[in-house]
Length: 304
Image 1: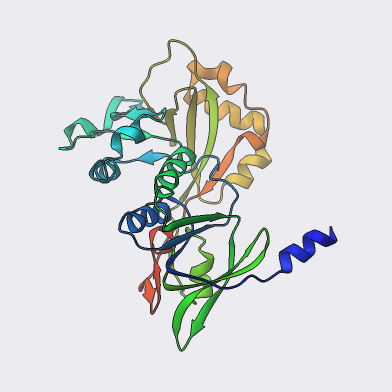
Image 2: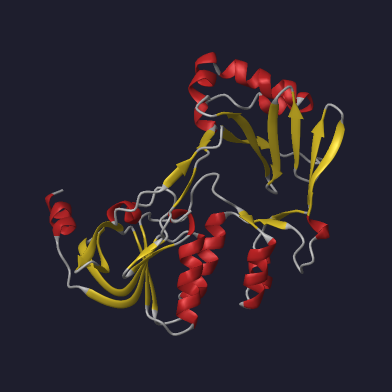
């Protein structure tokens, strides 16, 4: 244990790079790839040890596929096992309404590709690793910005082997809606909160099930049902902050609500037995009035 403490307090020699990107989500990873392809030295820092998160944004939209196609990566990306949403029918008491029909888009990719984000990020970073001027560091938690005369010159981060300092011409914050870099840079986001949260969970997919994703609207409740090839990913929209009330009512009450909306899936809904099977997404939105300062740029959810 003492050895581990010694390792984590060790300070390494400062590293120089042109661009240091904090956060290897889609925005940070794709930016790193674009810079690497141009021969620009880039260091990508990711706090976690892997990209695997449950119920992350797995939707790859037509506009993103167009970018992948321009980079010559679309075919290989689509070779990853995925499902596609061509349209989104919603069942209501009055019949079925088509909420979205992507066939009408004038694009080579008239659909949403449901690609697990872990595989998308692994694909993008593997492509970036083909370039010698790119480096990815996992398990790197940024703790401090290096600010001199009002200019951001890089970051200090804690890695598995101690403290590191990175000096960069440009530092990019791509570390998500709860951005640590944004806070360190004293940016105050303008927050808004749509009046809803979403409960995400999995239900078994059976032989003979329809392939299409869909929605269900009834009695003031909304369900989103997404085909994930080997299971159904279901989103249940609830009032903002309503999860604790739902949990207090008990799992049996929640299963009954689901069964009322999906009576034909009552046997599958019975597989929900523990609260740990349900992931709560707090729907929030924020934006910055200004998303840069000298030496620092904020992108993706860190900026909006």
